[in-house]
Length: 548
Figure (cartoon, rainbow, N blue to C red):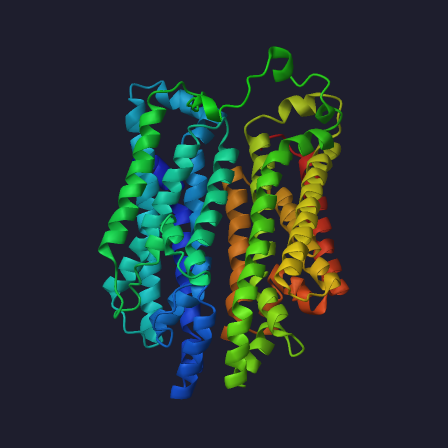
């Protein structure tokens, strides 16, 4: 009962699993990168080769003391560390808007408690949770660093966690602010996720294109990267950390101010030049609309807008990495000519028969399936939330079989993943042709369309878990699976994990299709697991009470 004494404590209690999962999980990911430093720096020549090679991959992160434990861990984990920003993104978008959608905020505000106080207590809980995650990440990183001979102190490790918590608080504040202008939490989370990807790309610009640092300064990720506490010789930039804190306070404070001045369930009116044309009463009601012909059609209409934005993000990333590879190709060709030992590195990236550009592009396109699977997680979250919040009641009250409703929603999601993959294929092929990269179009199609089975796998598992878990737990499970799979495939080879462990990751079955095409057996195994999971979820949904 102690946890229910205030809104702050109750909200913080709800975050207890996320704190432990994200804090310890991301800390272990950081430690895993430290384990491979010893094998890469056995001799002075090996150290020099590591530094030279890392310099050619500076698009991922700044190259600072990569021949040390802390420096290599900071460089190697690169943009993957921002996977933790998914949590504040979702938490910030549903902190107020999500409860307004469910109607629970009406009940909470009916008690004699000012709405500003409620908002501030919820916000304080998110910030406390992020700080706790940062502390756990710092403690785990310090413990791992001591085992592998790191020179950074426990204070340095905690500063690393604090720096990460600050940028996550900024992302959470941005999601909270955007949610004041949207009717639902989904669009707010989608817009924030898109901006996060834009911020990451903007930070990369100055490391790829010379004399463009002013562009990167527009991204908060740039100021996060100005501090490298795990590299004692580099340290932290206090000004940059204070700027992140100030921006997080401004975004969060503005959100609370706007929330206190609008109607519950309403939105803050946008400036006139940003408003969409007002619809008449007949237009507002979708009578006779094509999307009302079936559950599948209605689901397509609902998923169209978020799918469009995710298509832009995923295809945009593919085009961006083509540009990066084109920029790096000439530099790495000279490096390989001067040091034949680096040929083995390219072989490790993509196989012995990989060309330089294709091997690099294959390694960088590894993130595409992750992005598509993240899109699927957001849509599975919507399915689970519709049932939990009672939006499926009216649909199921009509003479429609439950199985048809579930398969209609799943079919719309499968259609969206296929469309996203096709557009990504066309965008990548066009960018490669423009950049002059000679790619096998068949393998390129395999690399982009091969994402679809992975998306269906995540959807199948999500629909199955929704039969037993509530929305937050279902989304948390899928997020954990994505992080675990990515960790096994991204770090596992360096840790020399056994093949049986690597097979636990869905990315293992994706392989390197840009180099070797899709392995039909692997694809069929993924599809089979997806079908089995969906079948179990369908049987559970057909037999259980709704929202139970």
